[in-house]
Image (cartoon, rainbow, N blue to C red; front, side):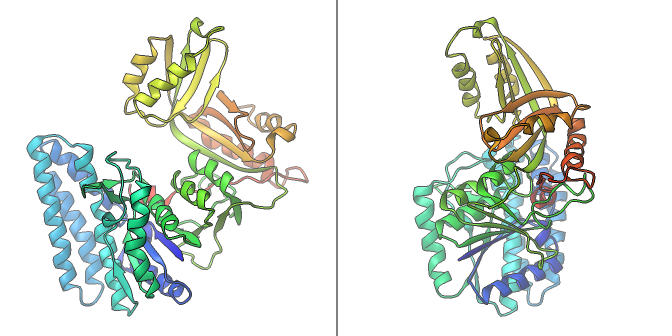
Length: 469
């Protein structure tokens, strides 16, 4: 059992779609895969732009986005034979889109529920085309609407799987086809509530969809096909001599995914970790490359395994004498973030201060207002978290010293360490994040480094975020 997920640039054109089908056919000679597809590159952003234009009363601008989406898909369909009825199907979906835009324009407001109905349409369009190409090439396959079995709650925009209903529904939908040797083509990113209302799993959620489906069918492997060779020693856009890391552990990959490793959606690893299903990162554009395998445990002598940076972070500093010799203060602080459903990335405390970081700022004004009841609040925008991921930190001496010595010319805003045996994180100004990465790489991986260098992994940029931009 294999789940193959392909991102937006992997299905960005008719040519790319043809190559995806070839990869699926090669896999199908050994195993009958579930193929999870993203929207064509740039389509999701066009869908959202149209919705926002409609809400703002610019309906002609919304229709222009529909025209752009139509042209991209028609071009792909025209490149395959026998696609006349598929053109009709695409037009039906686009007509639904126009009706939705009209509804948004009528109320003059874009709700999260309406946004989910709009933004998930790209996956339905792209998967229909790829499935048709597969059928035309003689591959025994079936297109399925993921909304029929990906049951979620109604947290529109970032829906959560309802596992108790999702797993049996997914098995019921997929297993009979897979057992008959039929390849299943379906969508990432989208789901639906118990009442059939469309939802999305959040940006980058196609990876998460693939992981969820892999868990539901007890897959042997989940493959994330993207536009990079895997997790690398550095982002090649920052460090020219970056190289691919062949294996990382679930624990290391989980830390990296959360703290900026955009090659994977942060939630992708979680279901796979719990089921111990290996996740393999592969490059659609270079399919012969071995990629990176993420598995339960990895044997390595390297103390330091990885460093990643997460930009666009907001730091919050709360200072109050009330903290001194008191109890329950942190509980009150955390309750505020829970109230506004905002995750905290890192945290550090002193006798009268708390410093923490977040990457969701939708409710920042309300959070600051509520925090101000307990003390002075200071906000610093546009900072970055740099995380050094390794192993056995508590058993080794000198690691932090060596890391910070290499960053002597970088202003460090905050340090968070000790909570995990594999992660040391610190916050720097956003403009200094790349410099910090280069300094660390130069210290540990350059030719002039010590004779027993420490290895770093910095996953490169994500296909999915690039595809949606």
